[in-house]
Image (cartoon, rainbow, N blue to C red; front, side, top):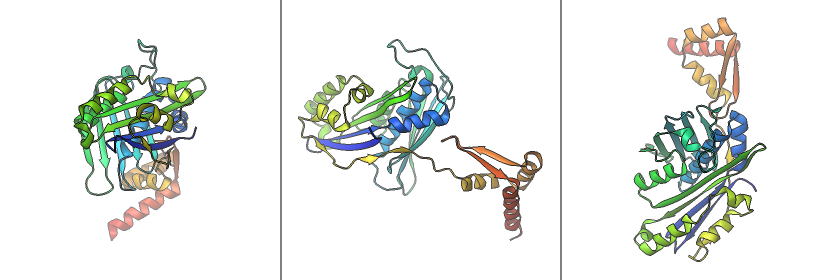
Length: 299
C-alpha cells in the first residue's frame, strides 16, 4: 500500500479525521540513519504525527517542526513535516535498543523518558507559532494528544504505530480524529467517539489485516455521516539539503577557518542530520568562498 494521507469528516462536519500511511518513508529513514528497532518506532511515530499535524494547514509553504527532548537514552527526536506531504527527521541516538516493555512491545516511552515536546507551526506567513508541553509518557501518541488538548484546546484522539522486524518496516502510520468546536458542545457525541476509539486495538494491526484508510474511517465513523475526501495525498521522506546549502553554512565560518580546512584536510565534509547525506567540498570550492568573503569585505 502506497504511503498516503486521506482526509474525512463526519457528524455534519463536526468531526475531522485524517489518516496517514508512512510505511515506505519510515523504512527509508531506518536505512538512512541505521536505526535500531526502538529508534525506528520512535521516529516513525513522530513523522506520522508531524504529517497529521501539518494536514490542516492552508499555505503551500506551511510546515510543522516536532521536537522531543527526553532524559531517556534516545535523547531527542526532531521531525520537520510540510502540508505538501514531505517529511524528514532524525533521532539523536539512533543505535539505542531496549528490552520490550511489560506489554511485549517496543519500549518507546522508556527510550524517550521524561522531558518536553516542542511544536513549531510555520504558517507560511508571519511569525511561526510555538508551543511547549511536558511529556506525558514518551510514547509519542499520548504526548501529541496532550499537546493538542492543552495548547490548541481541541479534543483529539491520536493513534500511531510502527511495526518493524528483521525485514524492516512492514507497517507504519497514524490516525487523528478531532471534535471541532461546533460539535464539542455535544457531550453525547464526544462520549460516543471516545467509546469507539477506546476499542481501537492499535493502528498497525489494522494495516497488517489489510484495512485501507477508508475502511478504518468507516469502522469508526461510518454511521455518523462519514464523508471521505476522494483525493489522497502522497507523502514521502524528502530532505531540503543540498551542496549549495552546505557551502552557505561553511561560508559563515569565516576566512581563517576555511583556510585551515584547506591546509589540514584539503577540503571539508558535512553530513546532513535529517537525511544522512554526506557532502564533500573541495579545496577549490573553499577557496572560492574565501574569495567571496574577501570581496564582500572590500566592498
